[in-house]
Image (cartoon, rainbow, N blue to C red; front, side):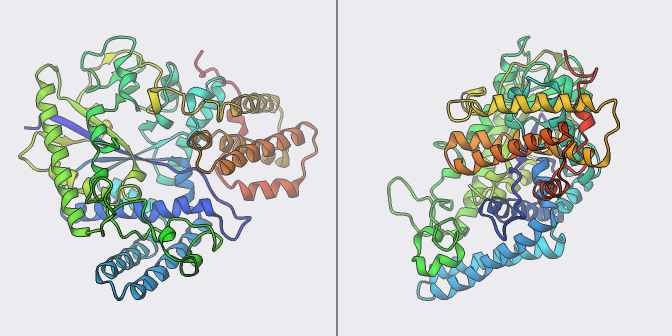
Length: 535
């Protein structure tokens, strides 16, 4: 008899980075690293679970920008160049480390991983990993959901109902057209919620979404079951909360599993460690050092020099940590069951890119968690939130509080002294887009006008991505983030003025359509105010 439920949710998202105007572009590596270190390792784990007939449920949120990039022929071909380049480097490393057997053993490991990755990507799934996720969904193990169009931070776009609605609806349309069915669940970007947002989700056909724990704890009515049961927002759209206890075990920089001294050290990479003459062909422009993905050291303990990575030892530790995670969830469920009127539901959401990229052993840990959860000896059942709502049909009605899962729990990471300048510009562009949509609502646009209006929508959506203010706050690639916002807004302003003045340059418009080749179904008519918009 299962006494409680565990929902593991992975949110897979990267900003839309695609630059056909260049032969190669550094920031496209973000996608290539994620394919190599996160998405293919996840697929490997799910393949093994399927082969061993493990009964599990896992939820994967695929953001629309990631969907568009994974299915893009240009980026697919560039990824093949990337992985073949890594294979060449691994081959060279096998030769270079011939006098140090422990290092050569790792070099051979990387070559095997890259060969296997190439086989999975190119041969098994014909360069489109979306088909892999569709396969696991069809098998009944993987629940697929989605997110807003460009991961726009909805609480700060809320000045315009049309802007929020189009982020949500465009995201759902993108998911549906590529995956083949509409999602029932929705990942709010950065778990950013404000009261009234659930009405947009209801209008879009969404049944549930996620908030951070304080969004439920501080709801309009005190939750009877804390964060271990969802709230009905009053319109049958359900809010599920992140469990803080299971989150700390994975996310905490001090107590979380990824910091264990047996795991691979992310910050020790041959791209920074080896002589420039040797590593130059495999770094940025042959003179700027970057991560290659080949790393030879483990985290080690304290301030000691980094020791060589021991893969078998690390995998064994991932299995031990997975068992510990399940044991603690069992103890948690036993404790919670005493005072609850229903089985406790533990919701554990994580960034998918944690597993493999930042935490090399993360996919193995996840696989073992799902294996251990399937054993009859414990009282846990993995379940999707959609499954839960089919089993438990009576819910407390309350409105969650404004909240995010960002630093300090609200919006400070996305609006602060580093990035607050962008919002007046975004809001003005949103208002201008609404005016254009209203102007042409009752007027039949000619084909050129319609193309320009739809491209203006794309430029606005791309400017609204939450990734750019996030990067400005973290201080990583600030120049690129700033350029992305200013470029998209400049393109929008050019299109707006061209449409208003009936002076559209078709050649320039075609160039913009190539540069920002996203959301092919974008329709400017959806941007005017509707009767369904919340009041």
